[in-house]
Image (cartoon, rainbow, N blue to C red):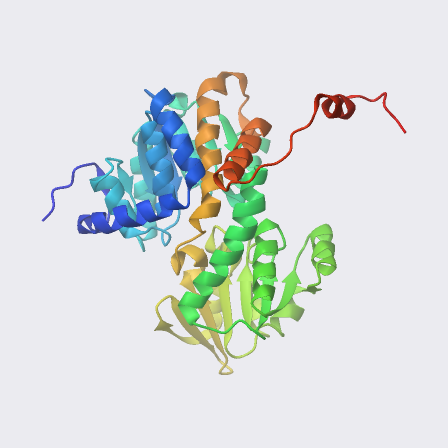
Length: 423
């Protein structure tokens, strides 16, 4: 039996070498994070800083963790979703990279929250969250630790929504940068990353043919745009459901059918929720779905699908493939739920391509560095990524792609900054 070299709770330490190989493979597609890692290693901005990162424990996250540690961070990692952990990655972080990690794919809710509390036992000075579970527990159950915290970051839409609500209630006790709102994050990660990885996860779980399939996308934010466009690119007939009239109008102008959820439920064959909201698909939708309907979620939490309602309507249930649960209704219809309603791109696949996570995690690393230097000037609440960081991530990404762009001349800058010039 292998002797564990670092604190943590992972499935199998013998997977560590496989994890190293996968982490290195992902690193090939993350040149911006690699450049930042080199600078952080030289400058050590995180010396003496304790960090707790509650993120999806994937190969891309591992490259971020390596960058933070190279910069001097005393880092602990835990999972932000029970089904998203790559066990070999978690093993490698503990055994090969010396980063305490608490994450096991398929862990139950009790273990999930034990792992979050283990990360909080580190008394973090900086938090990194994906979905705001760590921040929520910190503010509700571990308030004794709040005095240690300088600042934090948040990765995803759902987490930003939760944190904004906390701030509005006066409950958020330190500044948090919403990395999700960076243009180099939501334009690319949410649109291209979610779009590709969601279809990848559903395909791996079901092996369906997308061409000609009637696909219903619940939500037309950045993630919904990506899923809808990628499904259409695979030949699917795409229907969008929305509650926001402007987004619904945009979906119409983009060439998609738009209708109510119940209308779409009677027509669709594959249903994908990406709204970040509560019960986007519920009993009224299950009641009119066709036999063989497939339901998946790519929003952060599994509450987008009313799973208890589906269970109550079913007369039987069985797993017909890994991560595919068949529910049979009283009238004999079969409805298939994928990945327990959790993030299908991570439950059944590997999550976003490393190339887009390169920009997201570059924003994470640079935002953490900014917070350590400037947290005293920031009020408690949710803050946007500084524009100079967003621009730097875009510049570095272009540089690593070998792409050059123009810069403004002095005269052009003057014109843009002046109100006196006219026709």
